[in-house]
Figure 1 (cartoon, rainbow, N blue to C red):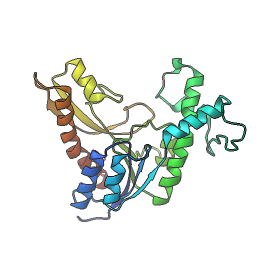
Figure 2: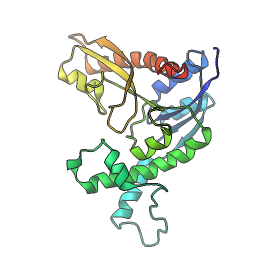
Figure 3: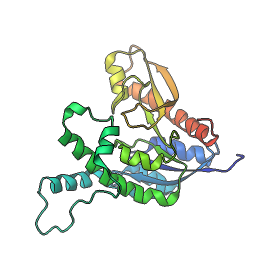
Figure 4: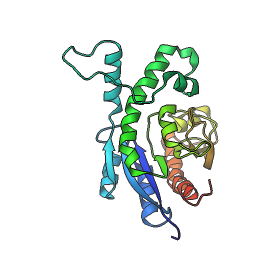
Length: 250
C-alpha cells in the first residue's frame, strides 16, 4: 500500500476479537498502519495473547487494583505500615476536569464524581507512561471497557479540534449509549440494530461519528444472534474507519 504507515496503539479489556480483525487488516494491507502496542486494564485478558502471537508489545494497567488502592487511601483504610499513599498525577486539576466531564451527572454528588476522576487519573497516568514512548498517531479502543476522563483525553488529543482516540460501540448511536448496546437494542424491540465507530470526547459515546453499519433483527432472533450479527459487522467496519483515518479522510 502506498504511503507512510501510521502508528496505532490499541487498548482492550477482554477477548480481543476486534483487535484480531485490526491485526489481520494491518497484516494483509487493508489498513496502512502498524500496531505498536496492546494494553489492557485486565491482567490475563485473552486479547493480550492475540497481540503477543502477532509480535506486538503488550502491557497491563490493573484498574481494579488501582481503584481499590485509591479508595483505601481516601478513606484512611491504608495500613499504617504501607508507605505508598496515592499521588495524583502532575498537572491534574480537579476543578478543571470536573467542569469538562460529561460522564457522571452532576446530581450524583461531588464526592462520587471526585473519587471517580481521581482514581481514574491515577490509572490513566500509568497508561500514559506506557503509551507516550511510542508516539502513536491514533489510539484505538478495541473493547476497552473503561471510560476515559478529560485528564487522559487532553493528553492524547494535543491539537485542538483533532481527535486521536477511536472507539467502536455496539449500537447505532446516538441511540443506546453505554455498555450494553446490543442488549438495549434487543430489549427495546428494535427491528434494526447496528454498530458505530466514533471518536472519544468528554461524554459517554457522544463523540463525532465516523462510520456505521446496520442489520435487520428478525422476529425469531435471540439476543445472542443479534450480538453475532453485530460483531460480524464490527470486524468489517472498524478496519475501514481506521484506514480512513490513515488516509486523512476523517
